[in-house]
Amino acid sequence: MEQYKISNLYNLEETIASELLAQAEFPWEVLPKISGFILELGSKLSKDKFTEVKENVWIANSAKVAPTACINGPAIIDEEAEVRHCAFIRGNAIVGKGAVVGNSTELKNVILFNKVQVPHYNYVGDSILGFKAHMGAGSITSNVKSDKTLVVVKNGEEKVETGLKKFGAMLGDNVEVGCNSVLNPGTVIGRNSNIYPTSMVRGCIPEGSIYKKQGEIAKKH
Image (cartoon, rainbow, N blue to C red):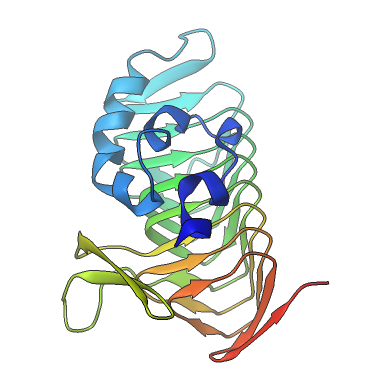
């Protein structure tokens, strides 16, 4: 599981949530702490750069938010981010600098690092997306198992009990997810990897990989 630790998935200089992530070994460990962290950090944000537009919703003055977007707190929308028409942010969400949350995209209990793009019809729940990660149109995270049991992260014969009922996906820096893909509960994708369109992904995908289908993963050259 070494390469799926926070230190090997993410550049913590590319998120306002670096202090939270630095306290944990694996990224899913911080999912229950996102809400509290936002509330604590929001009250400390510069009033010259951020406005609390409603209770526990802090939006950078340089961010672009469509009037049709719905943002529930606690949430932080960082500088130069763009929240487009009919985006739905349900709460417990950090949207990084220059990130894009697009048309009809729904977020819930997430950290989006800087420059993340979830621009078209995406659902991202109980997940963390690293610097410049991109989810193609219609790709989603599935964050609850069909049998409602607790999520286990699996990497070959290795297994880590998370103790979490809700856990979507952890995407490392520069991960590209193809259109209409489903990332099943407990998916962890190493940095600089690509997921083919219409994929159904589960388990751990090594960094620098091209995921074609279950059992067919190529190494990037």
